Amino acid sequence: MSLVAASVELACDALDGIEDGLVGDFRQCQSVFDLSALQCEGEKTDACLTADQVTALDRSMSGPTNSNGEQLYSDWSYDGGMDSGDWKVASCPGITIR
View 1: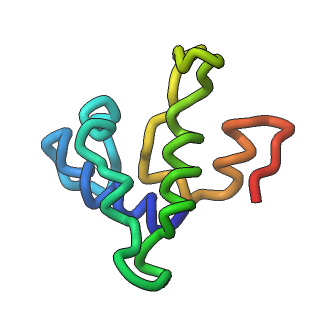
View 2: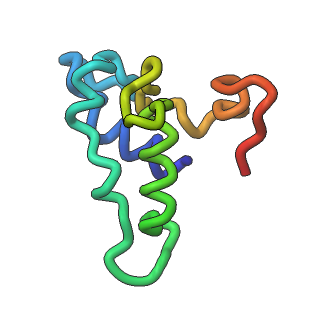
View 3: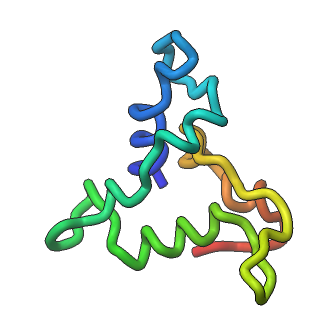
């Protein structure tokens, strides 16, 4: 999650007109940030994600859909705080993701 958070900040920090280490324009960030750019081209390292990791995170962040593929409710935004504390638990009380 640290890699994703740092990449989000790098791609989106300046979108609000101020480079201050914060993502202030979440809406535009979602269209600018490209998770697939973090996928490893070769072997897995700390600087990239496996194809399975990219797929799993993309599906998680896209929000739930029904059996027809229709969005049930909102997706989740990528932001620079994704690597903080219990981000995944705070987003989904009662669910532990490992």
